[in-house]
Picture (tube, rainbow, N blue to C red):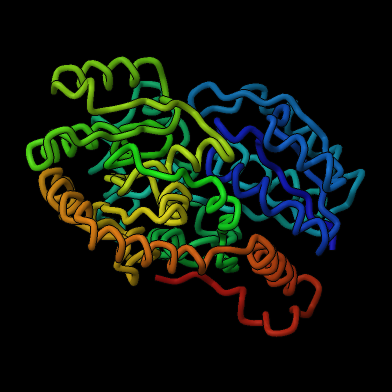
Length: 414
C-alpha cells in the first residue's frame, strides 16, 4: 500500500498533529510505503525522524497568512507533480488546513487518487464547550469576540465551502472528533484510528525530578482557548486557600499581543511571584519541568478534542482538574485522575486543586493518573490503528478490507 501524507513538520507551529506525526511515522513506514509532502522545512524533532525512517520526502514552500495558505496554486502544482510521479493509493492531509482540504480533492480526483483528512478539531469552529447539532448556530453563538479581523475575513469568504465536510472522507483519531463531526456533518465516509495517541512512559518516568517545586502546572499552546487566562483566576483563588502556591507554565505564546496581555493580567492580580514561565520545552527537559509540579490545571475552553498535554501530565503522575467539556467527558471521563468542575468556574477549580494537594489525595491521584496513561503507551499500536483505517478507506475501491476491518468504514451519522 502506497500512502502519501501531507503535513507541516515543525512541532512548535503544528503542535499536537505534528507531534503525533513525528512519533507514528517510523511505525507506519514498517507497514506501508509512506511518502511525505512536507509543508516547509523539518525542525529538530521531525528532521531526524524523516532521515532515520528513510521516508521519501518532498519539501514544498509553505506559509500561512492568518488561516490562508499563501501561494496556494504553486503548492497544488507540486502536489500534482508528486502524485503523478509516485501514484499513491491514498493521499492523507494530516490536519485540517482548510485551503488544502477544499483545493486538493478536485486535483486528486483528476488523477484518480482518493483523498482523506485527519481532523483534530472542527474546521472554523474548534471544539465549542456546549455543541448543538447545528454548525451554523454554534458558529454564530461562539465566534463574536473570539476571532481577530483576519479570521472574520477568512470566514466570510470561505464559509460557503463548509458543505464539503458532508462528503470528505475523514480519519477519526479520538472519540471527541467523531462526536462533533457526526453531529454537525453526518454522511461522510469515516474510518476510526483509535487509539490515536501514545506517550513514551519509560522516557517520561526516567526524566522525573526527585522532588516537586511547584504546586500546579499548566502546559499548552498559550492561547485564550486553552484556558491560559483562566489559570490566573484559578491561581488567585488557590493562593487564598494555600498562600504561597506556585504554578509553572510550559509553552510558547500564540502572539506577542497575547503575551503582553497575559503578563499585564498576571501583574494586575499580584501573581508575579506565583507564576513561572518556563517557555517552549521539548523532550526530557519538558518532562522534568512538568514532573516538578504536584497537580495539573487545564481549564481548556474550546481548543481541545483530546489534549496530548493532558495525557503527558497524567504520564508524569499529575492528577488534573479541567472544565466539564466534551473532550474531558468522552476521553477522560472514566478516570478519577481527571476531575471536572463547572465550566468557567475558576473558584471550583482552585478548590479541587487544593483538595488534590493533600498528600493522601495526591498519592491516590498520581496512581490513577499513571494507570490511565498506561492505556496509551505504544505508538506501534497507534500505527496499527491508522494503517487499518487506511485499509478500510481503500476497501470500497480495492474490493476487500483487511481482516476484521470490514466495518471500520461507515457513513457518519448523528
